[in-house]
Length: 342
Image (cartoon, rainbow, N blue to C red):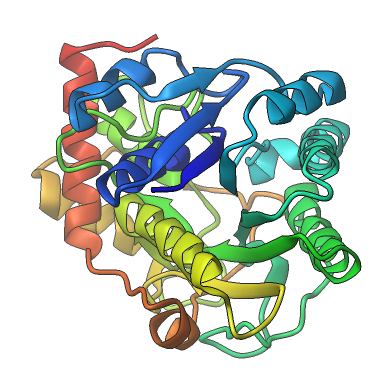
């Protein structure tokens, strides 16, 4: 079947998507600069799928290298673009890093493929909705001023893709607006592998539970929510990976909605941070050491998605619940304790 370029393919969501592409008969090709991932993940992917995926190490912000890669790989028919800086808190502290990395990589990729027919799936985010007026949030909800530079890069990238799709005839594009990916592959051979201090909730939970971190700080306990902590729509990373395969398939057969489209990718259910902690404690049997601290800049109070469009038009629906998310993340953390990576 088709050869699909996966940028950021050794990262958390990228590695799971490489596995699901292979399982669906595609040939994934990875490009990653390893700035936020580990080369050993290639070994882990090979253990799962039985073959080592094709891998190219370079930075998509390098325009010349990107063009050379595209010229040397003319048989690629689709792109799933993950490669980007992605931490909300860090983006508030280092906005220029986020604007440089997230825009230059995207623009260089689009320029390199200009004039060639390509199916393009973009890794976007529910942060484009800001603090939504109504819940669950649908794809037709207004895109508000971003709460962080990270969110702003996703908003602007979506605008770039929509305008490029309208101006040039060769790009067929879907932006998947993720909610909060968590969990790990059922084999416990791949999962979220943060470099340094985790920026996301679940790896901080699992690292605290296993003793790598002294305690977990919950950012804010005085929000206008039932228990005072932020509410998110957590989605299992394997379900999310399968959504990318569904998006590629829709683009291959021709999306009736046109050259550019967006889909929410979540479960449609909201869990607070404290509810997520309780779910982890139940799934793992571990009592977590955590404290409630001050709010964090850039955080949205509550958001979860209406996934009707994804179910009806993308032909995809999340299958794994909060218990599977927490149990798989804990299995991955225990695997890492016995088999350190990095």
